[in-house]
Image 1 (tube, rainbow, N blue to C red):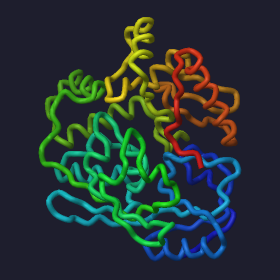
Image 2 (cartoon, helix red, strand yellow; image 1 turned 120 degrees about the horizontal axis):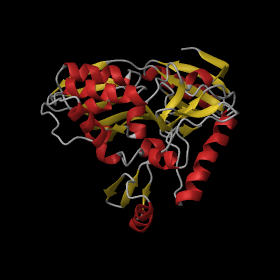
Image 3 (cartoon, one colour; image 1 turned 90 degrees about the horizontal axis):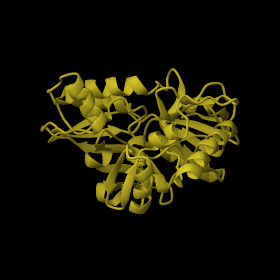
Image 4 (tube, rainbow, N blue to C red; image 1 turned 180 degrees about the vertical axis):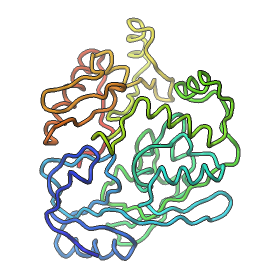
Length: 334
């Protein structure tokens, strides 16, 4: 295993921004992790493990420690539609792998960029499915205890775009995740925009393959490919607000998309940004919102993370002033 010094992190984030890592190493197995952690302890370094960098933003200061790039591969069929997958495997390739087996459970999560290990950190979700619904356990290396642990689904503290792994960045280095899928197809009605696409195209086939094709079509129509345009996908989390505030906004905007939750109402962050005039909005520091989806922040020609954060604050301040709602970033700022 090579440990490299002073490596620029911009190429390890799909936003294309960030300073240098003091040290950087590629991880292919548990032995690499143990060696890297030992090196960090000897040199009194903090550590972090990343995957595809699709949901990470590095500060201009970079990372004053050891950044580990997760490249742990392998898919094991455990039987009973259960698979143990290396954290460095490509997420969408695994989705396709399960869909080709006619298994249901993650087909709505098609075309989400990134690696397997990132899925439980964010509790990724789309069109009514979340990884928590199929994940059974996560195998991790606990850097505080210097040992491998198994964290079960019920121990993962999953919530909307959050988990015990996100709350403890650097503590749990994900080795593998295990998911259990279904042979039964999902049933309509689906998530609103996905169901609309199915209906408009007269699609009555709800097999995993059919749903995957529909999801890819919907996503490609409104979201830029991070391999072609620098972005982190959805930049803000859909906020959950009180019923009182929901009713107050509805009185002025009866068309506001909102969904009842146990703890209030989930509001569309994209709708809020659109109402504030930020659809296809371009700022002079090189940041912009995507032409088809204001929830996606893109880097057109910005050079620093400070540019991005300045742009973020313009968006959040406007929404806060107009609606009294504070938007929170979905990507993790390191």
